[in-house]
Image (cartoon, rainbow, N blue to C red; front, top):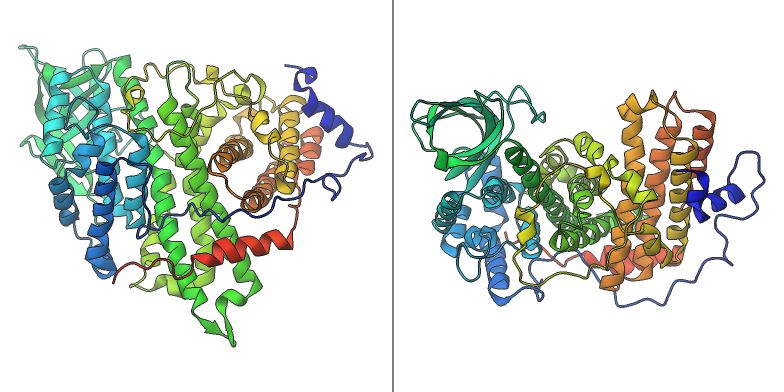
Length: 608
């Protein structure tokens, strides 16, 4: 790769930014920027469970999700909070799910269950959001069931598949036995072994740690090694078997996050899902499917917390003014609203790429960890902003908020830390920026179809060869002040990767790479936000307000990178130029405050 390959990106940099050159153009000027289009009817993408129509779902799916909402609203907030404080197992919710065949309908692939059963990522995410909205505990048992089912549906073991389908119909939940106490996120290592016996059967021994649903799971998909060959193996066990030892719940929560041990647990060949490289791929491909859900839980939690915060602040008077009259409060709410809208826009668009995935289109391998990592960390940002507004009110035991601020922290730390996921997405950066491929446009995908490919993803090697469509085509279609500033920041990042490529020594500095990854992730984040804003006809003002915080976030990570002691002079100069001020527009800001952020007040309150 040389500078000529960057074409207009490099030309733009050399004209405007090279050290010692006088700037020949201004980054932003009134006569350059396209005027914002007249306001459209405000489109609010944030969930209100009491009036969401779910028109894009089929009738049966729509009915089940609305019944789920009714279940929580009938229980009321007081019961929700009591169960959280007392750490009560959510048996009533699981009884409801069993009665309505909720998990069986949503989590059984086509051909293994009722005529309504299919694995449909679009409707799964609708339920993801609702369960997160009403509390992480109920979402968690669903999420862990998804992970536990992943290896089963990926496998060729028809006997276990049919068994799982039957257990789902009976209201069973499932578990994913991957992590171990001594190894944590290091799934290369395992102390759980299957030892072959003279009759061809096996005995399983070893422990697993941090396993949700480990107390009640109908089947636990367990990952280990074959003792004689040290090959990886995936197999299923019953949590109620006498050789399955439930050691303890390792958290203080409604959830049962188990440590369990297998003590000479008998395993037959028919209990084995895969061996060798297939078992390894099964683990990673299950995570590809399961990690996607965490961002949706974060979206649900933040949405409920936003309603509580705006209802409280807009109805509270201090110093003879409503709290929402104060300028800094308006800014905090506007920023929280923009960030939450961006989370939803990105995650919804990522669903389309998940459902469109194929052997020749693996762009989802970047977007799924982004939903897991970026959306969940943005959820923390949203909660921080809201907590600054409602302050001590956020500690009160009767508030949903008190539960939300605790739960929101968990999501970026499940299914591998943010650092693990950042290391993963960095593998895609070179092809994303410098070797785009040609792909047909991916439409919005709400069709009632089974997502077959998710359980036929194949080998997990060669992530660095994955190609993406040219992100520049998406950005070039948008001419808004803050999007234009952000495009300049992207060009500077690309120039940095060529002219200031990290040295071998810098490449060993993971903190430096993390900051570089944060900059890259913002580019991807913005791309899918713009794609979905066009699909959903989102108003220009809201898009530009989203990119207001995107410019600020890019500048923040550029500053952190700039301050690294190992940075060369060219690296320092380029990263310094990345630090930009977003374009201010009082009219835009007022529009987002009045018609979006403040308009959320008194729109939703959970039944008492």
